[in-house]
Image 1 (cartoon, rainbow over the protein chains, first blue to last red):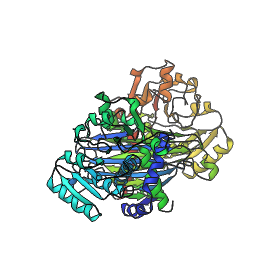
Image 2: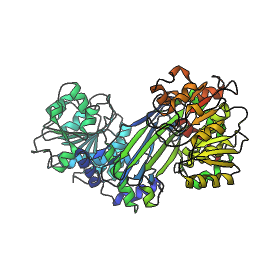
Image 3: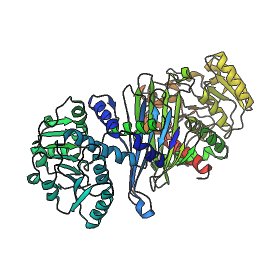
Image 4: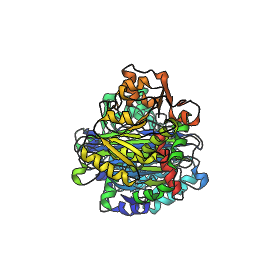
Length: 315
Length: 315
């Protein structure tokens, strides 16, 4: 078994076409070719922590992947990151362990950001006037960075709660070649931007329907549990195209789950991202449409990124 | 994360008091201090294989353990062992991965054998006249070897289906200091031995009630699924003391499951091994009693052996 450190992973990443790798995963998922058993879970009380074991494989592929992801919320007080984890890659033909990718959760962050870029690639309007980012955390940064590969727009308006976080965000992303405007008023994001990514752990809507302009695409990546919500359900109701990374998952959590509960949308309104990528479902058909992608995270993204890193290291 | 090879594991084992380590695990289990979530599973069809993910922890302990065990049944044709696996040890305080024990399934074999020795230590009659082993495979060898630490008896009668396997078994175990008699008639084992271990994948009873003599202890380790059976259910009915490694598990598989189905015993007849070890339940009280231990394998054994190997390597 090859042990791959975080540094080795980071060195292998630039040579990988993440967008293509994750797109192929979504296509296989929507075709029903991916097997993803129920997630394993351990919850610790003192100190508070949780561990999730996600695993699965693409049928007739060469590998299967087991991902172990942890969150221990007192870690920062010990000088340790709160999230951790690894991805284990095995042969689907012999069961032999091939690699342990000690990514400390970084590959999960990246595959999530890549999914945002894929949603934008297939659903954003032809001309992206300005990118809107809601949130200033790690995912809010990675999302903007990944968009570089699918749009030429380098102007962004970023919403955050704290001036300090906004200033840090601007400084970091300006180094990456973006022109950044910061705001503490999320209505400004809706007014100025026609490609918006929400990436916060909010439990209350941050964007309101009346401010969303025709032609806007919104990708929501923050709401990964049933209690999280970033978009007013009325926004989903007014959307012309409503895309889930996994329809099965979005029935149980995320923005779509909330809008279904609020009876603002119906299950029949939903398309699945893999089908939009492959062309099996029709996504945006005009620059006046409002489109929404709700990303809750699918194990096939883990499978694909782990395989790509392993292949990038010489297999 | 420390990567521990099979060789390093084998080198660390002689210094570990496996019996004590696994006993402490059973005691904690029977006290309700062990958390073992449902087993994760992937089944592959072509080539045929299965992967099981077992995980858990002892409350207020320092670690948790995730075990990945695979069986790929065409592997021998490729010159590879059919079973494989690893144990991963993590901190329960921070979630950080501490060690990957690349044991290829060997620690599972050993912790199973240790449980057999523990059952014998607490349930065998005072004077072990002769040890009976039913089966000639790896587990049948490890069981006899582990018994060395709990009985001074070095005489054994071994049953197997093939003369060739029996000869091999005798040769190997005689090197370990045993005097071995082989037989293809399992009634001979019952007639000669008062400490018997059954370790086969049989789906039909190999020992019959009418041959079992008073004072005998039997440990059954082979039946790990609902379709496996080594003991005639009438033997369980005639037993004075009936011990399960995990009552919850034995209600669903193993000898006890079969005897319950056949209405030969009742749930109320069952004791749990950890309680017998701790003294909370009374095991054998006379040398005339027939006692039976049904071992289906409990995740706390994995937790305990992984922790012990890690500690043995300097933590």
